[in-house]
Image (tube, rainbow, N blue to C red; front, side):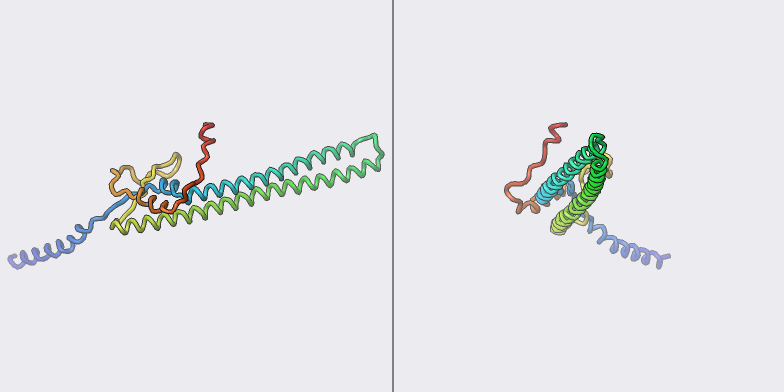
Length: 207
């Protein structure tokens, strides 16, 4: 028993020696409001303005196609009425009937053109938006990583508030200590142009 007691003491001392480094290296946690950083980053505003401008141009092109389709419909109805006009000869009616059939083919072609335009325009805009946002998020994450390493933080959590019907919040409470949001935004916006596109407030005014 006397021999066992010193061995137990040595064993306990060894356990404490292994436990001390783990206790000393306590994790340092920081927070970042990723939603705020993303929305307030000047490149996000520039990208949104560019996408909006492109969408406006596509909308004009679509309206032109719709106008062509509407005009073709009117021409077809007029040709059909003329083809059924009993005041003209049967040969003339037959001639105008064939003209009406040709206009109907044009209407179908225009309708398919509009449908294809809608699909292609949406796919291109969605893909461009996805790639742009991924690039911006990568830049934001790189700055967060740099700030975290400089501050010796072992973990950074997103403090963004949850959106309705969206994901639940990652953090339910924080006292605001070690929040890197402002520092990250300051670095990201260091080279921002003097004038940025202003957000569209017309929708909010209507509401």
